[in-house]
Every structure is written in C-alpha cells, then in structure tokens.
Image 1 (tube, helix red, strand yellow):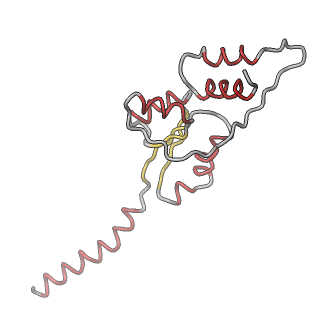
Image 2 (tube, rainbow, N blue to C red):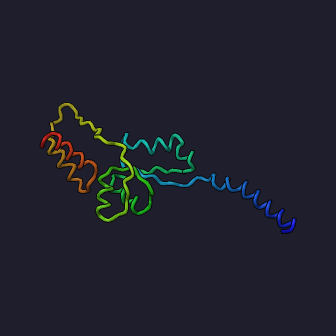
Image 3 (cartoon, helix red, strand yellow):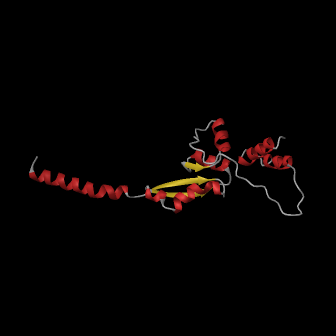
Length: 154
C-alpha cells in the first residue's frame, strides 16, 4: 500500500467516524395508535410529551383511532406498527387470522364509574348491556357490560 493510498484510507476512516454519528442522530418516524381518550391511554402521550420517544431517536406521531377495531385494522394493515388498545380487538383480529400480537396489559381492573343526572330515569343494567352489544362491533364496552352483569349476578 502506498503512502497516498494509506492517506486516502485514513481520511475515509476519519470521515466515517465523524459522519456516522450524524446519520444515526436522525430520528426514526414512528406512528403510535391509541383508541380512546381516557387516562388508560396516558403512556403514549407521556412518552411523547416528556421526550422519552425523542430521547431514544423516535419521532413519534400519536394517532387517535375511533375504537379498538379501527386501531387493530390500522395495526394489521401496517399503518401503525404499534398501538395502545384494549384486548378484545386484538383477540378478535387474531381469531380471524391476523398476525397481531398482544405484548402487554397495563390495566388489570375496570376503572369505570357510572354516573347520572338527578331526575333522569334509572336504566337497568340489562338495558345498558343491551345498548353496549348493539354497537355492532365487539369492543371493550360490551366486554365491560358482560363483566358488570356477572358481578351483579345477572
């Protein structure tokens, strides 16, 4: 190897050392789906707003989907590589043949409160469950209605 070839190799090596960190400093774009506007969905927003995604080189776009079924469709189609959604949508999707994977569950109990205005006629638990099932697509709401009826002994 000539002195000139060694010099060029050294320059290329130094440029790689300088430019490689700059190339890896670019953020990777990541679409993150979520399916409800509730406290259960805070992890994705906290990670975005506090800079956790950015700290790890991710340019995260947090995208709202109207319900778990819609979010699972986006997940399975590849529009979002990860989504924060309830279990029923993922389970139904896998049973229908998708390759979606449920990674973790953050909420292990139902944290819902039933409230009403004074003077409004009371609705039976059965009527509420029927309304939840009438939405036409399996979502967390109908699973919650089933759980409420079970706890109430009906």
